[in-house]
Image 1 (cartoon, helix red, strand yellow):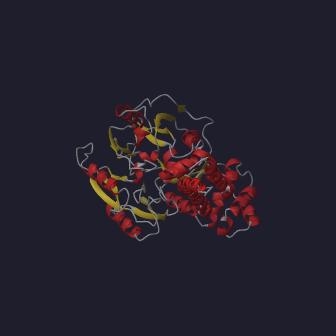
Image 2 (cartoon, one colour; image 1 turned 60 degrees about the horizontal axis):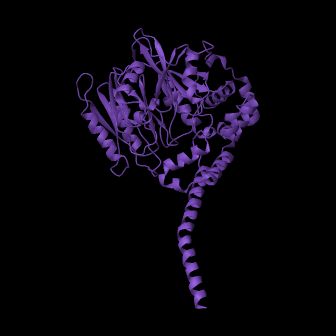
Image 3 (cartoon, helix red, strand yellow; image 1 turned 120 degrees about the horizontal axis):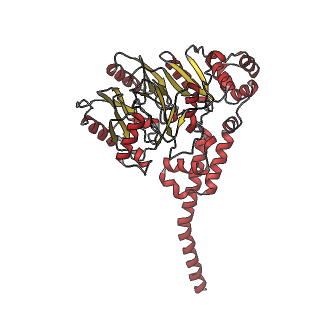
Length: 472
């Protein structure tokens, strides 16, 4: 009996020891999966789910919370993926089998709730869609093919103008798969069209009709809005849209960057959008041999460029010398300022942190001392304040405080992410008390501009600047 007691005691000890490790591990796995599924089921998340692989889900969750990676396995990721596919079935269906009739579009608008917002029935919407004439607002491609140069630099010296120089058009990819963002983008496009031509990217004529119907119901003018049938996966036009440089003969050239975000799935349609726009506008396109997003390039228009050093992380075959040469050949860079990447920040895009007000003035983000990148922001402001322009002057630094949010682990709301557009500055606001001070700061810093605020609180990261791309 004593031997049995000792044996059972030993077994119990082993069971308790294993359970003490194994059960918490199982519980943590269950909790992570449950929280991820709850998040996707209860929120309208603006992500291009049609592009996501299992790796994509695993990567985005692990990047948001690195400690979860050791708990994730194939079954967990598969369950999360199936939940997303079920909730966002309308995205998958519309993205993979694009609507090909007014009836298809009317039914999509019904499923997404956009018809309710427009106060229309399916029958009313279909009738209106059939009556819409698209020709007046449609850009017809000027060529069947893009004049693309894949392994050559522009033959003449080029210059990338500053954002505060005259702008002819702005490209915007419409958020057709994100019904919660139609209102935001409609306000954005309306503000753009008061200062320049807005070129809206949609997949085909039925999507054009859908957007035109929405504008009509919202009493938005289409007088300075045009559409191009360029397929994209997502709305981050800044990153994959063509960068317009001007050569020494005054001719426009598009620079087509390699678009691949390491934390996301490959967006095959977005990656080719710049090339397709070259065909539409008959502008030659040069493919830069560099992985870089447009959001990580800002310039004073005179050859000074500011970037985060994530560009070297994403191009391990480059050293600083090679980077400078490529930036000079394709963008006209004479003076490259590389800033240290924010620790664990996913995008690596400098346009969230720094903005050229004019060639001698920089606006730099500021935060509450408790914010995770407070010290990074201070270091960047200090470094830039000690940096000289090409004229040998020190930059004037203006600080712009970001708002405190309820979820600072997710939200990176930056007022810096604005667009200077001819006589206006379009500024993201977030429906918080700090909006007033931010808009006042712009009015003080840029008194000759009309300051326009648009609510982008539905996006946790990136807003006005990230979702637009100008053509000079």
